[in-house]
Amino acid sequence: MVKVIFLDDGGVMNNNLVREPQWQELIAQYFLPRFGGSIEGWKSANRYALTRFMEKYERSIRENPLIDFNPFLGTMMDRWLTDMFKGG
Image (cartoon, rainbow, N blue to C red; front, side, top):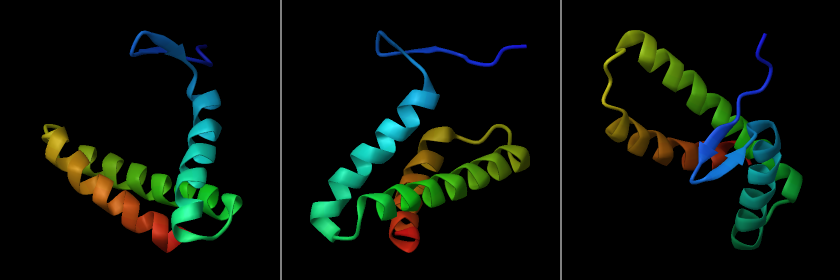
């Protein structure tokens, strides 16, 4: 059974179990001085937004397996940002 998959991301091997908390920390540090709140609040907001993003993505793929991903991603990135503020 495979427990970890490493992907080559721009020539750098990475592990999303490590990258996820790093991303949450960085995004929190970006939003905090601009919009206030707390580091933990922004981390929580990112988890909220990403969960909603993945639910929408999985539902869209089930409904339309041949979906054009680039326009979908553009729309979803706008929703991710909106959801960050809803969850933050």
